[in-house]
Image (cartoon, one colour):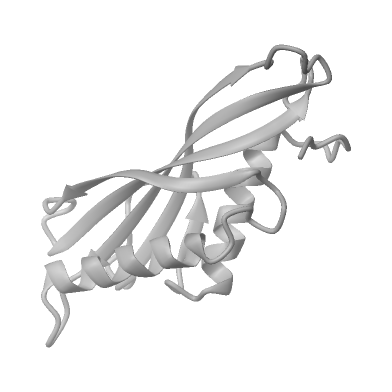
Length: 150
């Protein structure tokens, strides 16, 4: 599914935005951001940050009209312990909500060819304020016009 029309942004920026929109639409958290500071204010019980990490591309043999890309996205899921809910449970619920929301449409509204989780990293000492972070690594498959990032 080559992206042939230029919208003034790279295919990678469109993928990050599409993940953000999908997570917002699923209401996984009231706070979903792209490429923002890792500092999460105390008044946010949860927050999700979608970050582009790396993209590797190749032009498949015989396909001189398009390039195939693998984009690595990191989706950081932040949760705080709160009355009646311990940190591990709050973080696990957010992590599950994020992965379920992305799995609901693995083409992100036809923006990418596919997206799938390939790893999770947990950090329970984010800020000393009973906040944890589970970072889900996704691999995004997408196509661009040959020799183009759009």
